[in-house]
Image 1 (cartoon, rainbow, N blue to C red):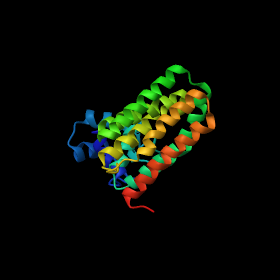
Image 2 (image 1 turned 90 degrees about the horizontal axis):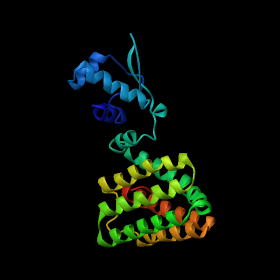
Image 3 (image 1 turned 60 degrees about the vertical axis):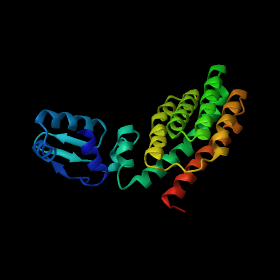
Length: 224
């Protein structure tokens, strides 16, 4: 129910400022009042609507939504505005992940190094075998460890955002037929630089990875 309404919101079928009564939600989606009320409560928690007695359920502008919520990201990626969402996610990664890598290089211990190398090796194997599922799993795990190793809790929570982007590229056929093997190998470069405490090198290797991914998406979307 929440996904159905959220998808309609992201697609612009329900516009900012539009007001619905709870009865309208029940009728539109053929659900009970209890289900409608619970769905609205979840949507309120994501800041996509507000609900007030004697006013109804008001759709908020997208700028007010919790745009970091993985479910909201999925709605936007499934909407006609998916290109804008993909670009925003790529820009966010480009801004954050190099800084996270530099911080990780100053803090990470041997356990983190082993994890990063293991995930980078799994990523390399998946790319070689054409295993898109394994590639996304290993890539998401690598960046989750890297962001957590930064020691910045806010960076660490962006791992979910990165994972949604990687899944979207797989599910929406936005992975190139021939993977950039150089970008895959650079994950090992990141792991080595982090382990050696080479902050600038770690940041530059990650910057190269996320910029390559952004360029691939732009090409597949038909952008400049």
